[in-house]
Figure 1: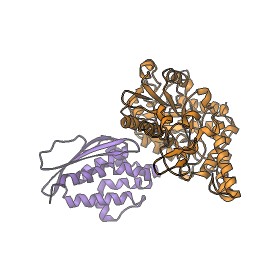
Figure 2: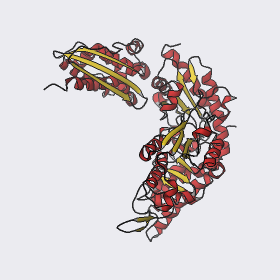
Figure 3: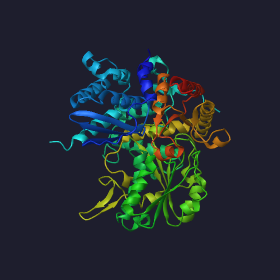
Figure 4: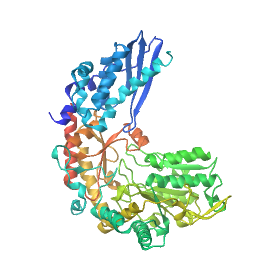
Length: 153
Length: 423
């Protein structure tokens, strides 16, 4: 498999074509946060909304447009974190960031289990210019979580 | 007619890239590769002549000053200017800002009576165009906000060509500045400089030309064009990074207040006020990028040696090969004029949008084939918005670009739709 094929694995191509969680959903929850992120290199944008309830990520929806890497990445994010506990979501976020910094090397089994389909993004780590694309939705998720929780404590 | 193969002059072009493939460098619109004479000029400066310029009573200081000023002369003669009409700037963006901020400072009362001619305020207008690089748009937006002047712009059509039908109302007796690009960094279209300058002159507006994509690629004579100011970028014209230049008509430069204040630029300083030296010194406060200036001078000499007429002919032909090739690929849209008759005033560039494939993804497939291109909005968001796309994939040429490079680009683009399953 060439580096190019390793980056554009089938699972990524599939998510890019049929993105999950696309379309913002109105949420009747107390803890709702939203974030708008722009990739200044290309102008791609994502607006992502999270709804939290009882320490769980109840809803993750988004809208925006971008390259196949950014679209597939936010689609996988939706699949992975919707329905998890906050601490699971945070561990997943951390594992994805580790994967992006791994320069194309696989992570340990624990973190790979956490990432599931997202391990397909391993090839992106070899292309520093594309890490931003893959991280766009995750940055929005991280920020939206902060927004949703800012009235706590 | 194409130039002879000049790649031997450019050490970087001999390296290989991904998978050991030879490099096909088509990103010269972003930054050009450097010929050995430029690299040698900088190295020799540091190895033989390095010293502080314009001061110091020793041999090295004299040699360094001579090289620094000689480089100014080389840049001046490339564009038909006098040496004293060339001001070093950090880059072309800084050159545009030097003019915009100088006008802003004059409007705030800095620079005394001689600067009063630059004053603008509410009721005055600044005119730009829809095809500008952000570097020749944002400084004017800021100046308008600062002074209360109104920003207007000349629109472009679906091909990216300026629409001059309403030129007389867009550039009118209230217009104080008309700023526009000489060549679009997205479409490669050469602007109708003659018509724009004539209108500006008729209403007494200053003209500011963005020469970033023209000076490296075609003959430019600032006196023949009759413009007031022009911004240049060294690194796009085979020179070093970290330096650019501003051309300005001498009488204007001698009256425009500086926007960086400090030592070296001043005549008399009292505790209350300061008078400035004549141009270009008044704009060159603080230590200057001397070795880079020397490198820019060497780049200007190299281009003059090749001959700008020949450079232009070369780049028109390369552009034609790229543009005709990609225009024939199903699912690929060429931004700007399509067809050789419409594209007769296009140089050096082919920007494309591939249906259903994001520019980043297009660029990645090209990169895998060893082809370096630019992806994104190329700092021209309004123009891309006009074309109905957020970004594009741009191939841009220079003196070292070969017909084979252009053909490799076309061939690689043709593989893109299938790779992403959109054909």
